[in-house]
Amino acid sequence: MWMQTVTTARRMGDFLSQRRIHQTNKRSDLRVVPGWSGAQIDLLVKEALTSPEALEKLCGHYIPRIYNYVLKRVGSVQDAEDITSMVFEKAITNLDSFDDSKASFSTWIYRIATNCITDHYRSRGRKRESPLEDEVLPVTAPGDPGLDKLDLYLGLLDLLQQLPVKYREALALRYFGHMRVSEVAETLRITESAASKRILRGLEELRRQAADGPLQELI
Image (cartoon, rainbow, N blue to C red; front, side, top):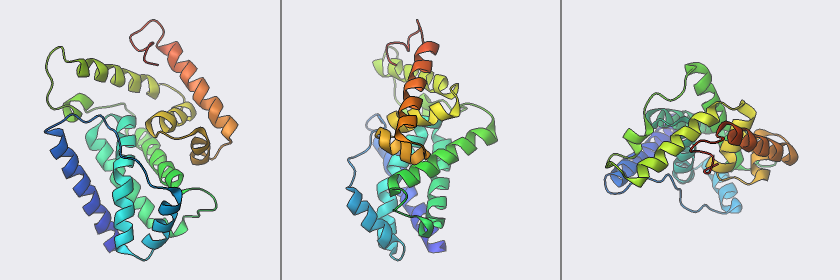
């Protein structure tokens, strides 16, 4: 287990180093690369139980995705790094308990991430502290349209935090995690109908809160 933790820490460090190097030359738009097939992931998860190399590949595949999802939820680079590390520590510790007959690995690890984010807000009892624009967009200029877009996003994040947790989580998985409704349902352990209702009602509440404001068109 110690070696597995070291492997994850190394992959996390490699990812963060590459992300920071990338940001010195180009702004980050928080996108992720295309994913692997479900069959490939299932095979890799099985191999990761006994193979450090497979575990490293699995972590390398999911760390950017989970990090971007967490960052979009918490709006702080430092918090996102800490939470992502926690997610993978928990995932590795409990990897042998993962049951692919109950959930896909993707929904399983996103469920862990969602729970870690919920714990983060409960323990801190606060909203964002670190301004996302200072950490994600290091080079900006007055009148830059990227700043306007970022301001809208940060406003949206604040509105999202005001929603009930069940709506917030469903919306975040659907639009930040880029999940299908069926995957949202699986991650939250609810029916697909319930997931669809939470997403729709969450959007309705966001639109109500944003009425006649700059976020109305965005939502």
